[in-house]
Image (cartoon, rainbow, N blue to C red):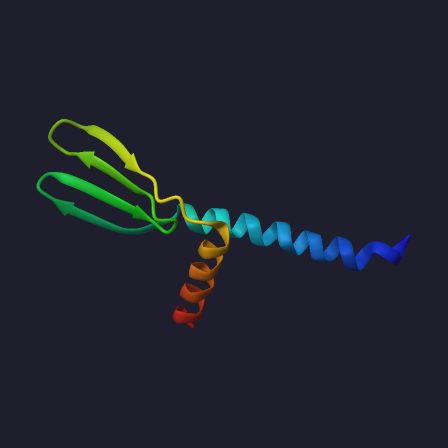
Amino acid sequence: MTEYTDMVEKRRLELWQQEELKDWAKRVKHVHYNNYIEEVACNNGDIHCTDIRTDKKWTVFARVATDRLAQRMKREKNDRK
């Protein structure tokens, strides 16, 4: 019964890291205001824009690969140490 515990633990760690990456990618990186436009940039590169005067909203998607996001997350964690 215990012959696969190493494989199970490895897969559990991979799944946990994927969930952590998804959570990190959705977090706000910075907020920018210019000419009544609010831009909220996320860690995954997506930018959520809002025209403050008309309350019109749109999103610009970055389409960044998962491995690239993982590299960015690791770099940010190392920078914060």
